[in-house]
Image (tube, rainbow, N blue to C red; front, side, top):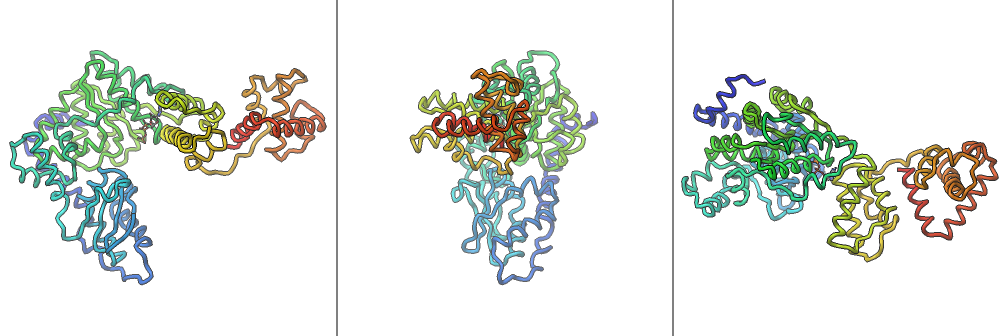
Amino acid sequence: MYKTDDNAKYARGLQDGESASSFRAMDALSRSGNGGSDDDNADDTPPRDTDTPEAAWPRVKRRLRAELGEDVFASWFGRLELESVSRQTAHLTVPTRFLKSWIESHYADRVLTLFKAEYPGVARVSFAVRDSVGREGSVHTAAQPRAVEALRPAATALTASQGAAAQPVASRAAAAPAATFTAQEAATVSDFGGNPLDSRLTFTSFIIGNSNALAHAAAERVARHATGPALYNPLYLHAGVGLGKTHLLQAVAHEARIQGKKIIYLTADRFMYGFVAALKSQTALAFKEKLRGIDLLIIDDVQFLQGKSIQQEFGHTINSLIDAGRQIVVAADRPPSDLDALDERVCSRLAGGLVVEVNALDEDLRGRILAARIEAVRAVNPTFQVPDTVVAYVARVIATNGRDLDGAVNRLLAHTTLTGTPLTLETAEAAIRDLIRTREPRRVKIEDIQKLVASRYNVSRADILSERRTAAVVKPRQIAMYLSKILTLRSLPEIGRRFGGRDHTTVLHAVRKIEKMVGDDAALREEIELLKRMLQE
Ligand SMILES: Nc1ncnc2c1ncn2[C@@H]1O[C@H](COP(=O)(O)OP(=O)(O)OP(=O)(O)O)[C@@H](O)[C@H]1O
């Protein structure tokens, strides 16, 4: 826990020189990022005649990992990729603008040095955001001054658009964060409004199941809590990728706003941006004041908080808000005890409220999320028809997360729109193939077949094993026998024994009968296909 000294220091803010120490910490951070002198490892590797930049790139990444350690490497470089090399420039890409800015400002020289060491044919590196390659790229040579220059136009635009002439543009630009903000971003960070909210991510659109009921209940109570001491403080939600953390956090934000609370919703990226920007434009005090004036602070992806001074600032902020009875809600991809990169005291403060895990979405919940997504699409595009068998199939095979369910709906929609043909299991499978993790087909057990077929036909497994001969039981029993024959290696007599001690000729009769019906009846063929896939996934 923080000592009271820390809080007092926080309250004093920048007045006692915290700015300078924070700058020193930031500098230390970037120095450690630079890994010391550029000559350290640079030219000790002889040129390799047969080498290619593509072959050299994994070696560059290995060296970065060795220099910076696993945590820093994973946070900043895990998703850095080599796109191409042309005219001695290595074009590197990352998925977000934030990563691009951070790597450019802290690590560009180091990446270039290591690349040159591994592949002397590279003289420059450029960074771009994937999917927007060419629009945002900027090239770095070792001698080029870094991103401060790149910020200059944005700082000018900000000053012009806001009429904020208090500081001369040149000094603002020189002191500005080493990042390439657009004017709009700079404005957002500057007035510290937090990240924009997605109006779709509300409690109404959040579907509750076993895996998220507790997280949902806690989030809703916190958002609706009227006055008095905060409830669970902090509320800490954690879950694997795409299981609904951001959705819940944004739902809290929407609901709390409706309740008239002052909230700020920030991703960890934005917190870092905001803090660095405020420090460098010497508005850190205002930044802190702004944070202290709110009722509810929501921070997403806290696992990305990096840098000693930023973590300290984050620690001070949450301490001060909690002590003042303000609510904090955070989310991460892991429990507080696994936030290795975060200061121990911050972790323990984060763990001191209510920690709730959102577990994997089960099949039932996936089916309901899918159905809701399809309904939402149909509201604007009524021709989008997805048969129940396809919904059941997708819910079965997309076992990963909500984002992949969204992806599956998009692909199904693209298929219908582009081909104009109705969706079937075959076309749906082709449309979502890339989202399905490939693995060995599961070994199927006769008992599983009996259970699944029984539930699809609304009878019990006992009915299937019984002597009953009503049509409602005979057909599913025969289908189950047929599936047992084609999906398992059991012999006809073995199958007969497992179906209530029947003779192998009964099984043979069932198999032939269903084979024939499948040949004649497209709906049954589809149904059996679905059952097969459900059993094998
Ligand atoms: N229970 C749910 N009800 C409705 N939609 C859901 C649910 N769970 C997840 N989703 C949807 O799945 C998608 C991914 O969810 P979200 O972005 O909240 O995941 P996340 O846990 O924040 O993932 P990441 O850590 O990768 O950011 C979103 O479109 C979200 O609306």
